[in-house]
Length: 274
Image 1 (cartoon, rainbow, N blue to C red):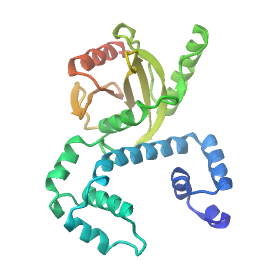
Image 2 (image 1 turned 45 degrees about the vertical axis):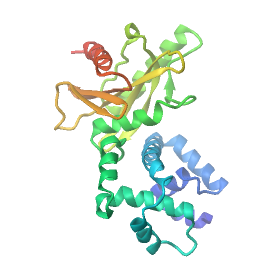
Image 3 (image 1 turned 180 degrees about the vertical axis):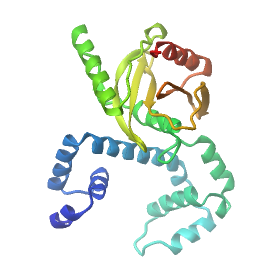
Image 4 (image 1 turned 180 degrees about the horizontal axis):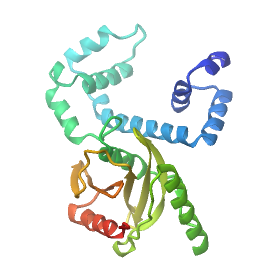
């Protein structure tokens, strides 16, 4: 991709090429600068990455399996002359994902639907699960703004900064919930985009014997069809309670039994200002 062509590309194509690591060093540096100066575009790219990683996780098992004969015929009939076996496996995985039962893979399709991690186009509550699945495993950068400072005063200053920043960006009050009675400390928060604007994700963690257990709280403007009362869903190992209070939709996500997650949800609900 030469410089002239790159400059003429629409912004989304340049951002996509940056995300896919397809740029020359000078082009990448240019996009780095743009993202530092445009927080909403940076948040949008992070959500693209979340969707990509969720899709990759969903297709990885199929990519490692042998290709069914009928599907192999379909893939090779559309393959480029230089296609490799690795390319064919990934194309077959994508074909299974897209075609599902049309090629005799109905059982596989149903299994994927039952255990999938939701990505772009899903309901807002399900996008909370996708974001949780992507950011909770992060070790060095689980949040954009950490509230852990060298002193208690620094921690409080970071918390105040986080509240002001998220409140301003999602255009609704953000409260940091105190879950210490349940053993959870606030890690920090981040801003992510959604179909109707920005939303906030708060992350809490509880020290464990091997690794910390984390839960996330998602805050955004709710869809009109979202019920106000508590609702519970389970997607694989992840459980989620979501509800609406006032002008804000809340979703709490965590890998734990329903009753434990419910106790956290009730604690959060009691702390929401009337």
